[in-house]
Amino acid sequence: MSKVCTLSEAVSKYVKNGDHIVIGGFTTNRKPYAAVYEILRQGLTDFVGEGGPAGGDWDLLIGEHRVKAYNNCYTANSGVTNVSRRFRDFFEKGMLNMEDYSQDAIMLMLHAASLGLPFLPVKLMLGTDLAAKWGISKEVRETIDKIPNDKFVYMDNPFKPGDKVVALPVPEIDVAIIHVQKASPDGTCSIEGDEFHDVDIAIASKRCIVTCEELVSNEEIRKDPSKNSIFCACVDAVVHTPYGAHPSQCYNYYDYDNAFLKTYDVASKTQEDFEAFCKEWIYDVKDQYAYLDKLGASRLIKLKVVPGLGYACDMTKEAK
Image (cartoon, rainbow, N blue to C red; front, top):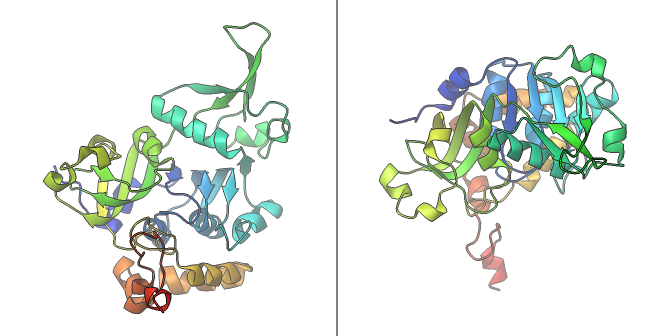
């Protein structure tokens, strides 16, 4: 059965107000920006988010007032912004319910979700401020659906009495949104390079939207099964979305658009300029293809990676 649809159809059918959402990729790597833009265009809101190693994807959702609660370990466009500006501004002004976990803790929580575990016992948070301080109080937690009433619970190791562990909650994910290099109509996905937490969230989520650089036949993607990362049964929607991760990079396809990220960094310093940026690049743009037209062919061509290097480089200059 083909799961191919348009991005508008995928978001409309599989993303709901109030969903617990996890977005794939890593800061400026393989972030499904086209899907995030479409979520914003459709006015969906009140999300509970698992930030993981987040970047401008969650900064956009936070800045547009679409996030009800946010579990964070790091939110920034690496190399451009130390801390994403709307995320930081909203939190400092008390406008964002945000809980802070370490990156390894969140990654393990997402893996535990893929295994169907009820909670996750760890030791790595013991004795740290991540355990000593709560970003979202128990009282506030009790008023927000889809987050647990406790950040964690101390418990005894049942196999070694007196040995303390930290029991972390395991997220119950409504929808995962992932960008991959190749996918087939039945939902089989091939991820090149680091998979990050994408396989875990595809398995754990109730609904999964995949955008892809290339849509290939079911027969083609099975020629080398060792290159496939996500099983077709985990995926609900497949959307052919060239440059769907722009301005982040997509390994073996294109580099991150540093100039665009810098433009966003400047625009996101104030809410007024941020909203003007969103109007120009999201709301006034009909869809991904209109977005690509606005960027321009020459700009996109210059982002194409050089085989053997893995990043964009003007080889005509290198040859001189």
